[in-house]
Length: 207
Image (spheres, rainbow, N blue to C red):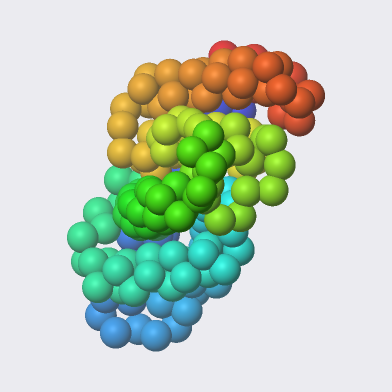
């Protein structure tokens, strides 16, 4: 039964890739309706992905807009090896990495300035990212970008590891490793602090 279900999923995935490739080629040829269909089918899951990655809705909207601008410019490079959504996630993930580098640099500068302006030498200034609301978000931010993406795509969107691998630009076995390490690290960090708000079946989904 499981084998039949797996084959069906693989067949559906192959058909989806072919449909997406035709859609992308039509959009590249100037078909506005094709581009509109791409946007309508991918905007919500892409926005959710960016919200999970950044922890901030406004930032997610900005990065989503940037992602579609780049996608429109580079759509002719899409070859149908994965779905359009996974291709867009890969573009969005690179935008997230760029954003985090910029934020990290800004926060380091602000922290240095705050420390210089603080009269008490032992007062601590903690570097943070915008949008962190609780211990779980803080723990997510401690993960590497690929571990975080593998975890969220698997647990929140229930994607197969083949799709996750395409989204984060690695092999399927490596995607499983990223997911496993993300689950392990989250459990360890959250057990040291607040209760875990992550489902207990996470590591079990690796099988």
